Image (cartoon, rainbow, N blue to C red; front, side):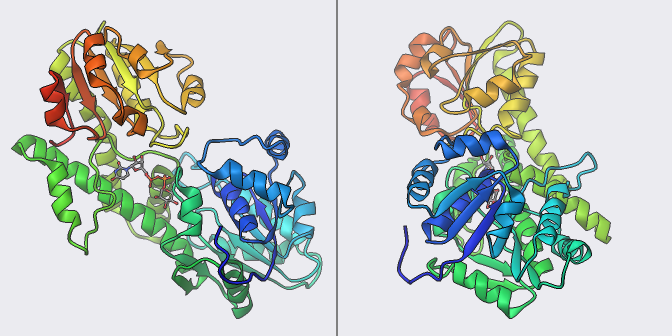
Length: 440
Ligand code: UDX
């Protein structure tokens, strides 16, 4: 994709073929490195070998196919084999939340132990997963404890800032590359790996690199909750949060990104990372109350959205509601912590009859709602037939292109509940719709 400078080819192993791992493996291969992507899910590895992607991410399939063909990328289910063949091991394994809010680091420890078993010469072990501060230190101790010889190694942290749906673009055009290292040797290798990418490189110690990831995600979530709180005041005061955000964002110190009010953030990163940051801060001795409030505001947005619908429809029981957009954001089929899950739950508890549609997330959603009384339909127009309200929960382009005259004709009562502030309120009023936005 970008080949301005010549590449010193490294033999890389990426452990984990999830969102972070698979994208990183395909992109490293595209940069010219020899990459083995390994995962203990054999079914996933076999499918990938047949060029079948485990999830939807724009441009990924083409990149995987291209690099499989040119031999820069291979998939394997053998962790030990892959580590033996590689000089640099990137851990991109899952760190799911435990009940107490801490991150489950079992998979990170497994990678460290596998490296220790297969250490036969210098290897660099890099964490790409989002891990609590001091995890690198623990990984280093683990390798020391279990290694069979005195072969040298380094550990490093290279946190990933990829957004789902834009992950390939973010990999090649990042705002910054963060490298947490303890030795010059590790720093040089990581810089060589990324040499063709044009971005500022922040070199730091490992603890700091780990903290940068949590601090960045938590700050972005804080921005979203801040504007959502402002949107509540806007509703009360009769002001327009869209304009407030626009004017605020023009101040360079604030910046215009992540100021869209709505039903709040979802996805696997923000909710999980916030929880983990609160937990680790507490463990270290700091009560991060600001972030707890960020979570409260976010949870509240889902309930508030349904309250607004109830205000219009009066009684939810027996009302038909079309829910368009189920994934936590557009261009992904990911449903993890999606606002739609909570909103659908509250609507069902109120007795509403729901018909659901999403351009990509139907498979995931069917699994999540399999016990619930919901109906999946093939397109938005079918969903809105005789509906008393249509909710938009994800700002897919497909919805922006809808024919609203046709929608109005099909509905029993023309009420649009816009959970993402994605439509022009005046235009919809002009077409005869009632409109619910968030803070406008
Ligand atoms: C995020 C970070 O952006 C990325 O750097 C990190 O590596 C992983 O977590 P992602 O979860 O893919 O990426 O989604 P992102 O595009 O950041 O959106 C997160 C959530 O916030 C979505 O639910 C989105 O709808 C919501 N959001 C975003 C808002 O509600 N308002 C906004 O203004 C922006």
